[in-house]
Image 1 (tube, rainbow, N blue to C red):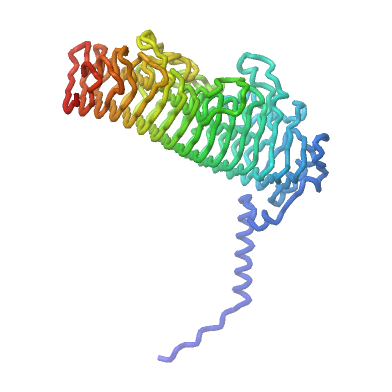
Image 2 (cartoon, rainbow, N blue to C red):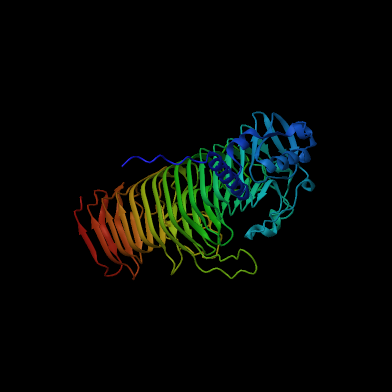
Length: 550
């Protein structure tokens, strides 16, 4: 059968059809707010072309805002060249890339009248008293702040007018505040001296903060950054030194903070280097923290907290909400009084007046691995829930800490108040009745591979488990004192296993079992050369012991 000759194609018709399709696709992109990358790269708006001088004297808000407004029409880059630019509030918009060249300094005005009052449409606990920002965006997308330059808020100029909450927070501007924004990038810049928190990201998505430097010691509440009800967040390669908390995750509304990675950062704080809370209405889920160095602050003046820092890690749920899926690994710290503090409480604060009072939240599935701490204070670490609401499924492994010591026999016998409705600060109780770890109201806790050292003698036990169910202590090696009553204390606890552990120094009793509710203890392979007796108990709790080395 002979081959049929194909019919000739109507080239003009095909070309026209392709053209119509292309026009239609471009129309769709325009509707979506997307600006093609080549156009964004090609569009540069230099603020000096809009009247900015860079002399550091005149207020240049209008010139800089004009450049931002023009850039937002096409998308592109607003270029801030070397110079000092004094400004009030600037409103960033979609598809604007704010680039600060080397030597560029954006200097926040010291006059409150130069700042716009803006309360986000998204409701949160902070609505009533946090109204001012230097760099602000709301319901925008594709925004970046990047470069080698600096933004300085001159926050020292904004003094609190009251010591009463919430009035003491008023009239102090954030440096950066973005609300309900998507696709954000903060990269390379230096941020200094905010009047309030340095950065607040509220209900944002797809946020990347990379390679920035932050120094924030100008005022009270000088956090490094606050990630609040945000999703899909990457924080990496940052260096921060702050008077208040450094990297802070919050949930000041029912919206969760979730899907967050924090890695490769060097942090200093007079308060808490990494903190979840205290506001925790929605909660925190699926968060990883890795390769973090926490070191003493370079600032000698302490406005809030302690010179060495209050805590390295604080994870707290106290306003309802839940915390789960938290993984921490390879953290090295020097100075914080409390290396880590995990707390479930019931402050039950509403995020707005019309909201229902929150119930008790939940904390579960938290892992901390490979943590090293030196120059820790005498308080101790803790994991604590409240009666009827335990912290569940906590794994604490490969931890080495040097504590100050100094605990007394009186400290060892302290009856700890619950403080269920109190602010969740790791130092609120003073010294715990164990110098290493105090775990109360916990379920399914695993403590493996710990090595604990002391600078001074301490008469408290190394660990105390109170109202604990299903606990494992494995491979604990810790300094102990001959005047301490016990190496480990378990009170009103059930199904506790202690294995492959040994006191470094003579102790009277390896394990002291206390309380009528205690039952079912399993001791295996412990090295008890330095223990006068393996265990004591106050009731008829079952104790199974095997493989003891004496």
